[in-house]
Image (cartoon, rainbow, N blue to C red; front, side, top):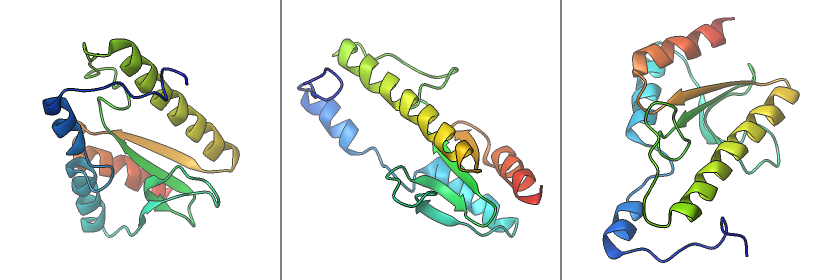
Length: 139
């Protein structure tokens, strides 16, 4: 197995912390959804933009072909807030680099299919992020 597919053993505290990480309905995602809804925008939640694609967007405007992803700073390597774990550093480096590679491949596949991708960092102000999404919807 490659290092990125073979999960290392972790201590109990790390395992407990990681088990609490949500895949969907995170606070930044909910804040963005509330702000977009307040602005009168309607969207689908946690949906694959392309048929047969396993990669799901956090918000999808299918008729407009807009997919919105709310990316966590740790998991998606935010240029401002990314951190490098010290335990199992090699495994984590490969895992996180794989996440970024997958994100770029998703962006490219959607763009090739005529979709606009909007990526929002978890630390972004939801009002500012909603303004970016609304501007794309209104174009």
